[in-house]
Length: 470
View 1: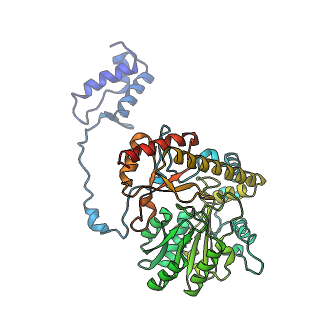
View 2: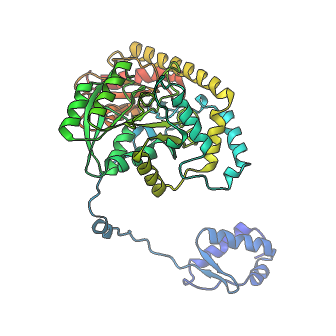
View 3: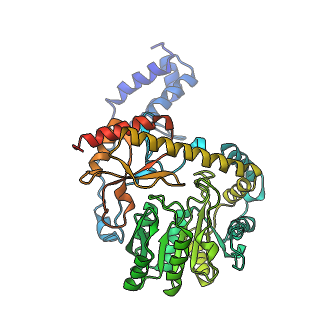
């Protein structure tokens, strides 16, 4: 042959390989150059093509050989059933809020704000600056960067009433996201097999963390105004629980915001039972106004374990949160975090601190609240106009989502499937109940992409409901 094309050389050799025995040696590069009247570079390129196709393998210093064909066989992992035994917590599918979706669907399921709602310029600049500091190369203290600890403590201090004792920076533990903080709290303060009171419905991540920690979940009914303190007291008395998990500020999914009176009533119950309340202030930056006062600001005896995340208002890539706890509880939590993660990336901590201390971050938060309010109102209007069977008991004053009640008898799982087939992704409310759902609900997010598609999404939801004869 007198053809120098690497493709033609590779094709010709591939035909020869089909008749050769496994392990047969190919002619040397010099022999192939002479045979095909091609340059060494062209021959080497042909051999690389055959290697990439898995037909040959090169042995440096020896030559190139026909690769043996490996017969595919199914892997047998049956032995792991006996080794692992029964799981202490049942694993399920990825929660709907974490699903990724293509751009051509109406996405009302998101658990995080859309990119256009984030302070992108601030985050990029902060990461670039942090990369040029010692934070990029050194290990931070286990409890976190002192400056970031101070920032979280000062935020609660600013709203602590006169006469109260605000937290100090040493009460703060920086954790790699609020989910990690929840897991630590449930492991360290509750423990396997012990009761944990959860609002019902409540954040799916808390339910998941509780199950993975092996604690015994005790649901406490909660509505658009929060839980009934008498039900909280009864649950403590009946179960001897020592921890209540709650979201007093724009609860996920109901949007409930506790009144000042409820704050005091629940704190009284917790104190009487010598217990803790884990306050998950996930929506601290996401209210219509910036006046929300954490439950932790009214406690100076260590009954409130306060959890505050920056993920929703800064960036999902900045997995930085804080747990504020006092006394021995703080030491147990720090020991658990040290065992789980040792420390949080100093680079991420430095970037987070840079973002939240920039004067323009306050401007960003004001704009974020306005945009979320406008998106919420747009989705409410779309539902009332195009999906009247989707009832909104309370329009929330903050957060990222609406809690929607559907007609009795609605098959929520089928509804989500039918809507998905039509191009609408929704989150079934069943994922937010730690026990049996009390009715058919959906959690619809207004923080996802393309709010202009909300009317289309409402119509698709209405069509899916109509297919159930509702």
